[in-house]
Image 1 (cartoon, rainbow, N blue to C red):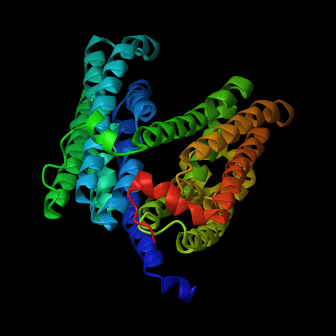
Image 2 (cartoon, rainbow, N blue to C red):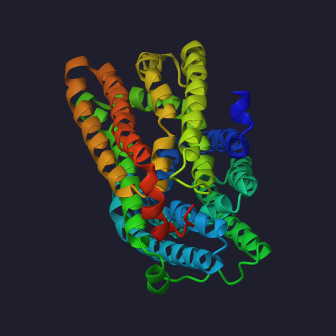
Length: 448
């Protein structure tokens, strides 16, 4: 371990993960305060409406969202390393244009679909207008160019600041709405302006860092012209977009499928178990966000990025074991205190799913390594197979084992996800000598 931390790249991954982790902890606590105020300040029906509106806009933005931050890291980081400044400007321009276009189309689509949703959740005319206003946030939710810029320029501290400011403003607005008895309109308006300010702040941070690094006029939206100069750009953004959509759909439909097969009570238990699982797996998510930009500074034909991936996987696995032990000890009392004794059965599901925490955390570097190697299409194929296997398990096992079968299906799905990605990752490592030739044309890397 002492030798691992002697590696500057490994230390950078840990440092940036700590930056993001500090923002995530603050965000979680402030988010809990905001939800508590909203739940107490409104009737259960209107609280549900607020959550549905927020979830609806997020779902629309997630479906339309291109992973432009990955594109900036994949194409922009090698350009920075090789000091190809014009190429870096083209990357930012294309990413910015893609975000604007997809965000605008998603906003229009979300507004057009909202009238049908309003009938289902019982929005009256006044609240419908407020929900329509909330849809204007979709372009900010669907934009990940600022994230890519700040990660590429190694400003993870600013990302952590932005992650903390948004829930802070939402929490302040929620406290004001609660104590001033502003009800549903007060909460949705304060949440709207908090999200709007945080979105604008993210873009301002990015523009300032670009100016500070002498990338003037980089934030000019472009489409076809910069794409022609970036070989493989369209292939990469469409492939990563489809991979993200499959991942989002898989996670979104899990609880729905459990509810359809076993009923709403089982769906509630499964949702609680998944929430605990996601919380336990947060460290891997943070490591992934700092790991990908760092390996893009390295030559894929050498052993260094692959060794860095192995070390990061072992570190994440160790953290996963600790997280699993903590959940084993504190899971049952935590569920009883937060959710109530009637949901204590969720602990049985969590015990089954805990093994998947360690497996999924150890497998986090694989996506980044495959993208670095230019194997994004192969990763999409593996994601499709893993998702299909998980859905089949989720349909079959609950019929035989009840709600505990859903937990076994989730465990199996995570194993399939890691295993299916491991095969092409090992293959890419064995043929790494050819990778620099294949990827340099697309990402602008110099030959070793």
